[in-house]
Length: 489
Image (cartoon, rainbow, N blue to C red):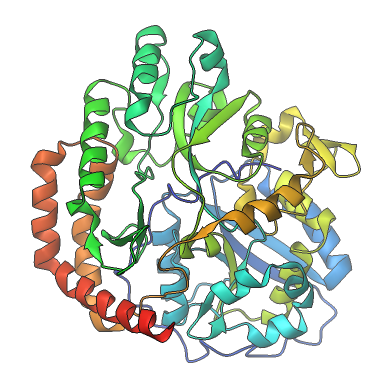
């Protein structure tokens, strides 16, 4: 049970500059027969995450099991977090053989690519080969992830709300007797970061890479695009988040921290800091919470990690769609792909093999549903959240027996975001979105990581985004949101 420690909110937003040109098969269920040969079908599965040394070794064991169960073998191909969206856009557009692919609201955008025809509509497949998924999932996941009335992906059965947290390397907290009781805001981190900078010169006080995103109390219309509605909004007014006092203050604080040496010098270009996390040479970072996440992060890293809230528990579109598996519109074997996904999300043996590797090699069982990592786990450290149902993965030894009951309570307690259920139809502003995205790419990571002075760069970013068509996009979004709001009354 590994790295759901990878935050869903801190990864590179997908590029919207590509116009996918796919065959007319998009939007149809199960477009061709699976074949009648007894030879097992090989499914090609692309997923997000740092490529692991033992992936092929684990997939050999997975394939032995799935060949016997459903007549398929599996080839997994991983693309690192920072590169996933762009590379998947290119492969999907080129028609490269793919059967199953990870998609989400924050990487290889689910809604936009469903509308472009990259994914197969799976309504019929869910009713036939995916019955186990439908029985296991909270109905809110499938209902909340429909695009224009159809399902194009299978959400991971996990936490519904999103809650941003500050994470800390507990070894350093204990060493310097640092108290995080009242540490919730970005600004409240400062005295702790200062201590670590002075006492531990080889440690990153605030571990931020190019995927780092600042928390502000807004619900984004499109993730990582600077237009949003405030969380406590009743009129659902769309604003440019770069014009808000909350974002301006956060950006100034990050620039202050960068100048003080609290943030890695090359943060704006670093794909990830997984090597730093493996060695423990970090003090604080930001992640997305779930019940008992501290236990999971600690088990994965091999040293204690603790956290404190950075924001409220809120159900966003991006958290409902925060981790999904889609069947490619170009898949030759859509029925078999759904059979595999159904097994993956309902069979604990398969799910835990994909998640944690080979029993006796990467982990050992210490109870019926409890595991402990072995030293070779470092060769297969996977992002748990991205690989299917979380609630059938084994517990870590530190986890309470009622962990999955607590997940249900956590889901029930989440407060809906103001735009929950709204999916922006970008068809009338595709050109403008592409232009704004291009401009945004030149500024976003540098601003978010504090690498540049916001007083100088923010006016430039706003001016160029407005020239690229941001106001037109916001006006179209406002029109659609107003109609959506009226339709709910």
